[in-house]
Image (cartoon, rainbow, N blue to C red; front, side):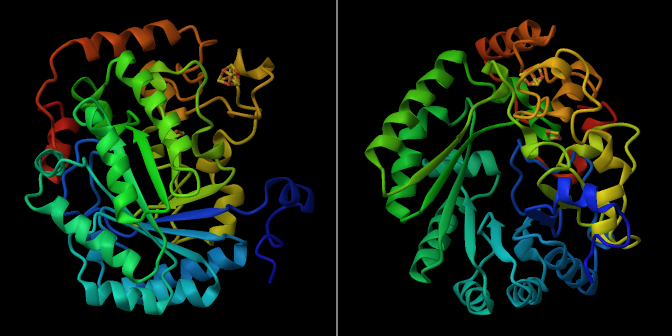
Length: 383
Ligand code: SF4
Ligand code: FES
């Protein structure tokens, strides 16, 4: 059955198309405690996680809808004992399955099994190239060494490897060594992603924000490395919005290209969407994925350009960056319906940049590490 056919006009279907990717947050449980985690401050509990049969059904629906890429994420997805079944089903229905993992819980046997079941790609996160600092940032003794071991297994099994390296003021000086590490591991791709400030990272912003000079240096460094490593390593690079002049097209535009499913089954247009008050999120326990994609209140709210205020509404870039990030507009301006303050055309842009410069110029405060208790404390203002 055409998954669109029951619920929308042919015209709308043609205009929107299916999501390209589905991010399955299989669990919020994680052995690491990175202080910039993209999970929400209030983490979902194990008891509320979707059972295997619903995940399998969601993946079948996703493939029927036209989704091509499945990102198996968390928390730490390898904590789910049913990951094997999920990977096998993804292979069966033709989804390109990426495992996004911290790596520290994987055994070689399990990775071999996942590869045999049809896993297509592995992304391993690193917190630094310097083991002591990496373990401090992840708050996990011995974690870095284990990640290196896992990354080498990935290559031995001939799976494509991406190294994901979030950078911030507490590791940015080691960026040359991080690039060297990715080359040494035989990674095809390195994501150098400056921390994006929502949720945990927003709470720790002062302790993570690099200076403008550090950011400019990192831009130059990556450009030189890209030149030097052509044909060896692809480097994706995300600069911090606070020093940008134009916002990023967050998620490729709201409700345009991807769908996130939380551990309990809530379907989100982006990982931080639950911070936006008043949005209604549908759950895959109650509704079909195609129906959610096309009609869910949360997906419709900022889809396209009708919602845009000025200056976006009359800007020539409105269908390029889609007005930037709704969650950033909310976090900084208190209104998700405003132009992203990362845009130089926003009235708030100067204040946005000044905050970054002021915070980066002060000594870093103590980090608040990601764990359920700290998240609850931050939410109620105890931290
Ligand atoms: Fe993008 Fe809006 Fe800025 Fe134009 S005004 S560049 S659409 S954020
Ligand atoms: Fe939600 Fe950017 S993180 S729109």
